[in-house]
Structure formats: structure tokens, C-alpha cells
Length: 139
Image (cartoon, rainbow, N blue to C red; front, side):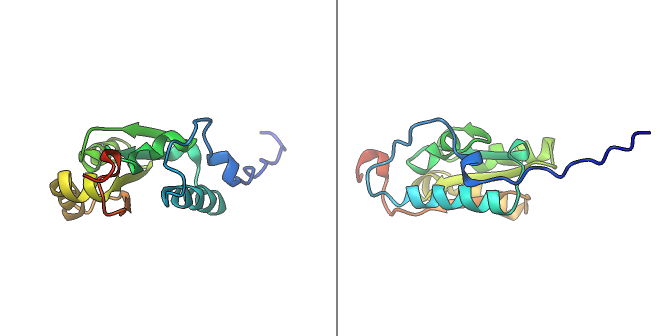
């Protein structure tokens, strides 16, 4: 037995959640504010980066996993809730986030989102609503 006292984990800051990837959203886009607040809040509440996974589909919001220094998966259009359900089922100790937009999550992937909620899967859903298919510049 050792007499050493375990040190408490170092507190995290917003910068701990900032990846080395260049953010590629349009100037003035509200997605920047969502990203900054998510990085800030996760640090404040002490969420372990190595236990956090962001899963996204297709669209402006879905670049989110690239900009977070956590685990992340960029999946196909509308299928992020399905993939997140599988991740959570395999490793229930992970904190799993679905990051989706109104087009990806409510249009193309609406059925997957509804069934994820119906199953009451322990995932968090962050839905960006910019009221447009942004990658098409307003289709």
C-alpha cells in the first residue's frame, strides 16, 4: 500500500475542447456562437474529453465534430441518431451527442430522430436551426 494521495484531475478550460482544425463556416454564422458556448460549458461542468463523442450527419452544423477536441464521427445524411444509438448501446458509459441541423435532422433524418427519442436513448441532441439547407446556399 502506498501513502501517496491521488491528485484531483486538472480543471479544464474552453481551450481544452478546441481542436486544431480551421473552422470553415461563413463569416457571421451563428454556428460559431454555439461552438464557443459548447466548448465553454463542457469545460465548466468538467466533462471528460475522452468519454465524449459527437456524432453528426451532413450540413453546416455537421462539421462540429471536427472542431471539438473529443471523439467524433461524421456520418451520412440524417443517420447520426442511428449511429449514436449504436455507440451508446456498445459503450453506455460514454456521453454521446448528436449534432444535426434542421435539414439533416428534421427533414432527411426525421424518422431516425423520432425513433431515437421514442426509444429514449441516453444521447443528447444539439439541433441547429438556420431555416435553410446551408450547404446549398439556400436550396
